[in-house]
Structures are given as C-alpha cells and as structure tokens.
Length: 347
Image (tube, rainbow, N blue to C red; front, top):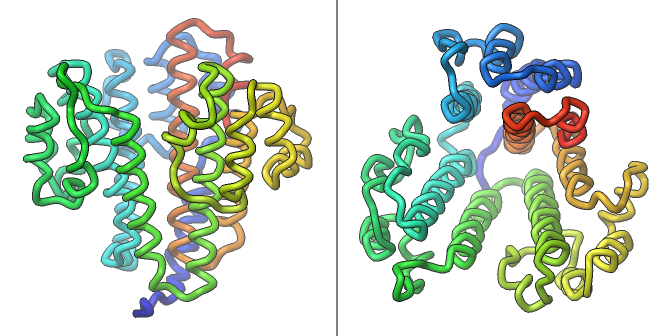
C-alpha cells in the first residue's frame, strides 16, 4: 500500500537550517589544539550547537565517557525534535534510529557476555528506554546468551538470533550475530521505504545501498590488509546487499591476495573512479570510502525535497560529526599532534 507521504517542506527547511550549525573546519582545528577533554567540552559548550545539552555540565570535572554519552544523547534528542516537528515520527521509516540503537545495545550485551564482564550498564543509552521495545536496565543484567534469547523472546530480535548457540565457554559468534542483526535492520528500513513513491523510495534505497557497499569495502579491506583473510572468510561478515558494487564485483575485490591488489581492483570500480575524480590518494582506501559516504549524504541533503531523505542524510552527517569529535578526544588523550588528528577527520 502506498504511504501518503507529503513533502513536509517545513521539516526539510528545518533540517537544512540545523545542518547550517554544524561544526566547521575551524571548530575542528580549535578542538584538536586543546590538551584535555575538559577544554574540548568547554569549547563545545560555549561555541557549538551542543551548548544546550552541556549547559549544566561542569566541564572541569567531565570525563571522556560522560562527554561522549552526552553528545550521543544530543543527537537522539535532535532526531526526536525533527520527527515530532510535523508528526512524521508516526511513520515506520522514522523508527530506524531506534532500531539501530536497539541493535547496538544487543551487540553491546553480546560483547559483555563474551568478555564475562558485568559493567555494561554504564555504557548503555538509558535515555532511549522510553522509546525502545525492551528494557535497557533489564538487559544490562543479562549474563549469558541463553538469558539474552529468553529476554528477547517477545521482540523481533529473537527470530534473528534464535538459531545461534554459545560454545562450551559461553561465547557466541559475535560476527555472525552482528551480520544477522544489521541485515534485519536494513531489511526493515527497505520494507518501510517500499510504501513510498518510486522516486523517493529509489533515493532512500540508493543511499542505504551505497552506504552498505562502502561499509563492506572498508571491512573487507581491513580483513585483507591487516589480517590476510581469504575471500571465504571475508564473505562471511559482509552484509548481503549490493548497490553499484555488484555481487560479482564484490567477489572479485574480496579475492585480492593482498592490500595492493585489493586497492588496484577497487580503483576499477564505480566508487574507485569517483575517488580518483576527487583527487584523493587511492592508497588511503578507508578514509576515501568514508569521504564518499560524506559526499553522498551532503548531496542528498542539498538537493532532495523529501523529508525521509533529508532526515536520513542529516542524521548520518551528525553521526560523522560525532565520530570526528570522538577521534579528537582520543587523539588529545594520547597526545597526538593536532595536525595528525585533523588528518584523521572526515570533513
């Protein structure tokens, strides 16, 4: 059934205005020049759109974990302000950030189960609890994979994970679980989009599949360059979707015997040619793939009149901004020179 998805021009205009308040290259340079997390927090508090979220925070006493948690919360609150603006949040597509957050929480639980740790409660985004389909405080109490399956019994995630089993040490195959959960997430987004008009659905699907293509390339590159994995092992952790990178082309790249050949084969693809047109160093493949993702999101936000396309693009761009800030925080903590930190940023 076709979804009655009017353009929501006010939402699109609001998103573009909010994007205008993004951090600039000058902001990033200033943040990278500091010597402490406190200085970074103080700058974000006084000079950026994060100010309201950090208004009551004592930046002198703040630590890395709390700052990152507050910035993540800021992004969620921004998301809900957007989706509440013209009540677009009632449409299934706009639940994708909640579903993604739930998937991340389940994966976090699996990490702690495998590590036999009991401290995950401090890292969970409790602020989304009222939106989530399960209780984040309760999931933090889980200590085994069997307990997790029982907990998820009344959620869609049970069917996703029910065929997995823990080994004799209580560990579950994290990579397999992650692929299954993220495949479910993408499938659910695509199902929600299928009710939109063809042009809008094609635009959203194109963004999603481009994102998946480049995520797969980045992960395959890491496995080839750093671990020397073969094609069979690489394909096990690839998301089972393809956009402009066909399944045949993916197999050709994944079968590369080493890093140099991987890059050479990638350079012959649609995305590789775009990287060359951007004048980037082909050898810095992971950064180039992320720059392409950034480019596509910016273009979509600039040109689309669709609220769905605008929301998806904007929240992706906010995610990149957050990851840039986290990279700066980590660099400052470990005394990395500011110029080296800036070279790691995706801007």
